[in-house]
Length: 136
Image (cartoon, rainbow, N blue to C red; front, side, top):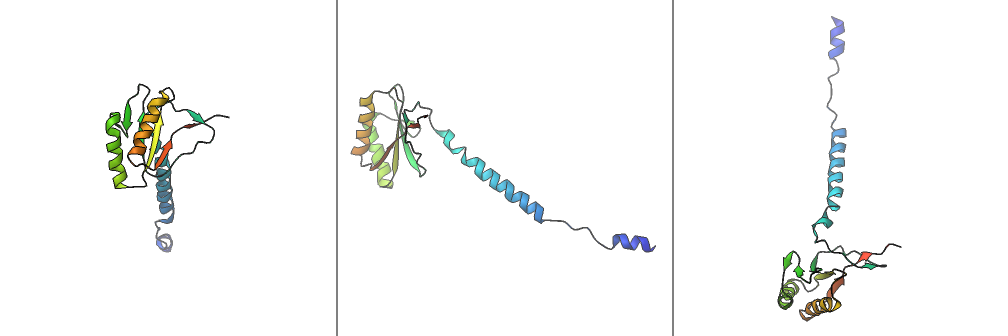
């Protein structure tokens, strides 16, 4: 029965290193895939095009002027006369807060300027106007 002892001589081992590699691969995969889901939570607006458009990455507040003229502060509809007070509250929290003005390209220019004026009156110093990259 010497044959049986030779088979049992080496116990099977559980290889954990490949399992750790797979776990790290899945972790990186899900981290990167969630980065592409961030942009989907904005309100759809037909933005005008610009040749040198850039996308801001830091935390920002969206002020949107819809096609029919409605003003949205983040996802909340707000009248123009209350916009200054709402922006002033955000500026009081953080003086370097970035405001992104998103206006549909069919909106009257005067309406966009009045919203921009309210942002400036509230003390907003960092204002960006959202555009889409123009196809060349």
